[in-house]
Length: 303
Image 1 (tube, rainbow, N blue to C red):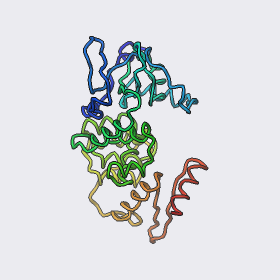
Image 2: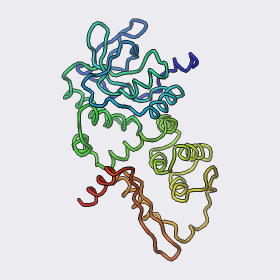
Image 3: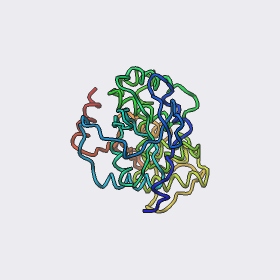
Image 4: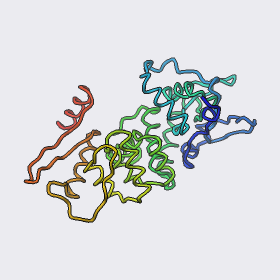
């Protein structure tokens, strides 16, 4: 493992440092030069962080950790950990244990983290909700704020929807972006692609397929509609579809039908396909990953 990889700077968007801007919530810390760091993301030595003994999650998929380790070595950490100051220079994890473990595997000596004081959940909620309204936050930064509220404040998406005055669908759309490969998330942060592009990529299939189409978006300056057509009419693996202005073939989804498919997928938080034959017949396919996921979808459909 090279030292350059181990010391790679965290990949943070410019708005992430402002996600928690309340002096009553964060505390003053010191960086490596001994300078105070107030109301910002601090770099904390990995050796000074201990796991939360009350974390109910104690088993982690080794293969997934290895993949996250490789991503961190290549791109750095996009979503900072959250820690609590314990005294004598020590910190305890509040959230982000999977990222913390992968960072250790990656050989990092420091990780970016929000530092919180104890018993400040109300202040944290207020600060995050206020910052979500900022106009200069990109879609990934908003999604990270939503994720923090859900994880650290133990909120459901419905409760979060009420707190931030956003629709449940909007929250789901943002959270789904965090499932995209880090390279694509960075593309949103760096304004290489829009949220509309990213939303379409969520349904593009495998990570390799998502990255292939992402590169095509950047290189060919494709519109969101172009990407939707690419995703809807998937090419053979490794091949690109040429975007043409010719009429759509029979059996292809109309703009209204494609919008319905995306809306339905957002509502169910699952991949949905509408397949039409040239004679107008077809079927709607809802994908699920497990028995519990199927039960969740059935419950949503019965509401």
